[in-house]
Length: 246
Image 1 (cartoon, one colour):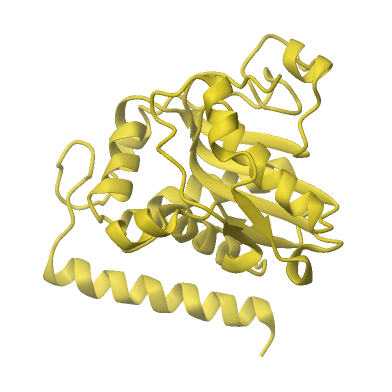
Image 2: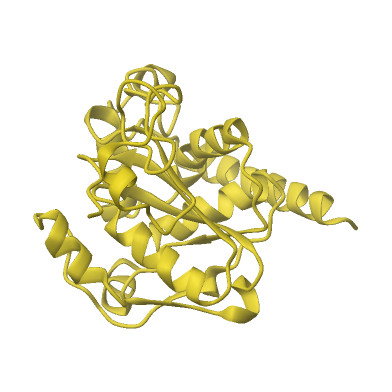
């Protein structure tokens, strides 16, 4: 059996599992509460999707034109490119919170679909997919890594290998919420390590739910590049605020 056939079988099996669960426990939209879908088309239509034509080609910050932004012109990021699907507001913020803080893991498939569509549109050459790892404390508290759930669905959808252990978190860090850009960079500096046996010579896609300053993706890219990765791409569902790397 080929890898694409195996991936297709896994996707069908997961679809069947969730269909059975939905038959017993009919889903409601995680945003508006409407019966019938985990995230209804009406709410999805309210997402402020970021344009792929008016942003910095490196950090993906929305702007007029396709020139490098002032930050990337003076301080080029370690990652090859970073992109997000929509603004972290309204219905998108609500469903991410449902996935992240309320154990609504069934949403991961719904939320991975726009990520997969964005990845296909970007035409990045990627060898493997991984996710930003949680701290051990948050992993125990939450019971799962929401970024890993998204990354696994994306990898299955585009027939790319998923390597959860390509990145490891060396230490727990405080929450990035409420920290300024400089504090965020200090908070995650040196927090990650990559496995050279998995990353060396590879083009790696790192998936997360939200990016704000890009500090976490930058730290992940540092670790992967140190382990021999040739390129590191970042993909997130939402962008909150702006990127400031310097």
